[in-house]
Amino acid sequence: MLLLSATGLAASSPFDGRWDITIRGDTSHAWWLSLEGAGTPHAKGTFISDHFGDLNKIDEISVNNGALTFGFRHKEDGVEIHNVYSAHLRGDQLVGTAHREGSPEPAQEWTGVRAPVIRDKDDGSWRESQPIELFNHKDSAGWKSLTPDKPFGWMVEDGILKSTGGASNLISERSFWNFKLHVEFRLAPHSNSGIGLRARYEVQILDDYGKPPNTHGNGALYSRILPTENASKPAGSWQTYDIRLVGRQVTVVLNGKTVIDKGEIEGLTAIASDANEGKPGPLMLQGDHGPVEFREIVLTPLVK
Image 1 (tube, rainbow, N blue to C red):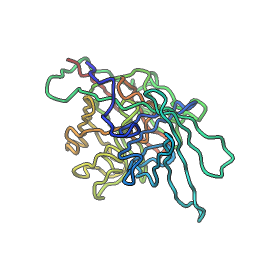
Image 2: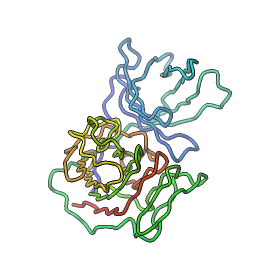
Image 3: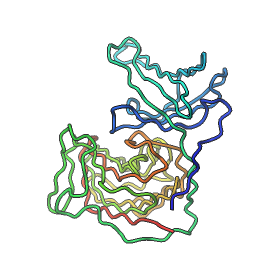
């Protein structure tokens, strides 16, 4: 059962709080914004978008005449790039644009809503429903491309779902809320993939055997929750994920070791294509970052 508040976090400034952002005309990406002290000299914020990927600290934040402006500065090939986001409140929505200063490209239009308070907790009250095999070992039935205009890039061979590395991300045709998920995967050397929970929160898949754990490594909730250890196997080995998601709480077991235990998900990660955090969402398989194979994908809904 889904329990959430229709309103978001309390805010001292009308712009403060967490915002889930939908981009006009773009169904393959969603953004997330968190602001604190907007309109004061001590304003700070973080932002996740398809342009940057990571959980980025905002370089500049200002409020003038009821309008919010925030931005980022970085260099590309020695040239300073300035990305600017502008927004105003329209009722309970944040309505804005994004553009690169000096670029002839038209600005992107976007709309933000306050991230919902999700009250479901992994408190022992959830029971397992009937398991669902999301991969039939024959073809890609039950899955579709997130970006149909790009090469599909997936095939099934010897009962294994394989991405060539430059594939589209896949999303399941069915959507889910609370669940446990068993996945068996194998990576090529130096490859990178991920599993998008509700098409919003990425559990990273990465060839990082023997390296220290970090928020971008295997077992991490990408850019948000650090795994307690690196439980990866070498590239070319079959590995397992057992993931449990209830509300905003996620537990990640990598190769039999619990590396995240009921970690609290603050908000969207860069893989997100669906900003509606209070609703069920599909499962996503990342195929555009490198070769990856899956041989088992079994999801068990959790219900009251």
